Image (cartoon, rainbow, N blue to C red):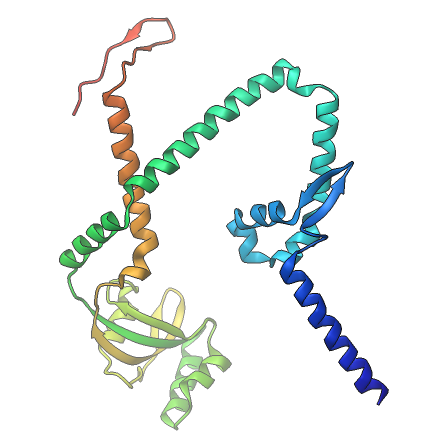
Amino acid sequence: MYKAKYALSAVVSLMVLGVAQAHAEGKDGVAAVVNGTKITVAEMREAYENNPQIKKQVPFDEFYEKTMDVFVDGELVYQAAMADGVTNTEAYKKQLDAAQKELARKVYMEQQVDKLATEAEMKKVYDDYRKAFKPQREVKAKHILVDNEAKAREVIEKLNKGGDFDKLAKEYSKEPADLGYFTKDIMIPEFSEAAFALKPGKYTTAPIKTQFGYHVIMVEDARDAKPLPYEQVKPQLKGMVAQNALAKLFEDIHSKATITRYDLKGKAIPLSPKK
């Protein structure tokens, strides 16, 4: 009876806590107060969202806990710097000027890329890719990789007796069995020749030797390769279009500029002929 009552109380507490967190994380949205200055959960979350590598590795609540002191220390150092009048020093002004220029370049290029690297441009590149695409035969295969021929023959013997390929792969293979779909030119020649000679559902009846060891290969399916779906290649398309957009941007701003270059002796460097 006591345990049931305690459990119910805990559940209710968690529900109430969840509702509170849904309205405002931290203390009314504040993560910490340093000498009267607030550090908000929002700014910590923004730092988290702007760092994809950290975001992949840890959830926000863990980031929040581990970096709290970093934000607090950062605010303390900032306050100390301001109290010391660091913004009036030449060193600060020099670095601020360099930082402002770098930030201006970064923001400008990002804005121009966003303007030029449009969905329409990406789809145009994708359409060109589809038109140029040449279908190739590809197979879906899996393999069991072992160190020596004797062990590979042992695997084949077990398969011949009705052994399950996936179970044998877990028992014997040095690496994951599933290779997915691939075209003939992707794999090393010895492996590809053996794989593409098999019909779906069949496996190699003799070990296939490569530089990596001895393989037992099973082909599960064969088909003609098709162009990858637009959504799947969209990140790569965006990169290509962005690269073209930046090249066009630099070409444009160069064409409108007057530039004189000097060598180390102060002599004007002749302009290179335009290609």
